[in-house]
Image (cartoon, rainbow, N blue to C red):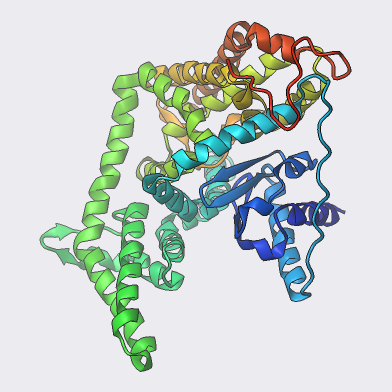
Length: 507
């Protein structure tokens, strides 16, 4: 039954993105189905948003992203991939979806109008986001996103293992859980190297082979110009650099090595040259960079405290809006390698709390707008679990002010958590991916478990309350209230917008 539902969702999406011939690549992250398109004009955005399973759409450079939510996206994506292959093999073309009917000329502003306004805002941002630097960051994110499920699973097992160890329960199970939790992290450099080579156009297994040098125990016997090497030195940053180098060496070999010798010479030179540079340079440099990142993050909260938390919590929602938040994944991963947890994630998670508080305030300020209230009710459960895209693109961003007041709530929650870090109660997440309530099982730090949970819960509560209060009192202008706080069958209080033009609601 579940498979049929996921198949039906995939079948509904496919014709609305131009059919199988319009798709060049398919992937997914925690919440989004990511596809690359041949012709962007074939996509029917409004029809996609109207699908019950679709929480929103995001255009991020060359990637078109359909927000399906956690869990659902991991089930729909394989069905979508299979459907694309089947339709291509059968040489059939999905029928074009019928055009959506024009909106009535006399009505209240609904959730669909806000979604259209959000789409217009994203389209305006597209040109500004397609800079070389941002595109590079997205490529880096593409390397780490596929690793998130394993990071989450191993992080939760590590937390369970720590709890059992502290309580002294089931001592025989503790070593087994430790092995399960640590196995992936001990070899994460290999997976990073594999994905890096794949992303930058090289042979993935060669990238993994070069990165494997970093975690090989035998590196401890190598004297690199008087500097002792340690297994794992450089971590994911070293693996990333080594695999990028391997890609360039491989491409150079492809240009100069005769085809008859390519199968022997190219992989040998790629691994040899990249491996030597990794051992006698990259491992040390990446190790110093990793240590610097860990030291900086800890000092930032130890000395910056509330102010640092305020800035980080307040600026994270704009990063999510731009799709750049995933560029922080290498930093989070490096901190987990360095300290066992990332101190940044609990602070950044406060942005989601501010977003939830803002959405609840909009809900109570618009008691007569059934359409928008229904959208908020359906998106709030995901928001409490840290999935903010439906609320951002369906509510706060197109409304304008609530997006800003949501950032205010995130800043307040971040300041609360940062303050306790400054007081010596530093803690973080043992894995990346979840936030909101879903982050509780992943928390670890210097203080006791009860203190850590209480501080994080207090930060969420502050984010909810400040986001709610700021939005309730300052988030909606009088003009917005007049346009929004009416039922759909109530005559408009302002001149009717022209058909086909979304109402401009940001003031």
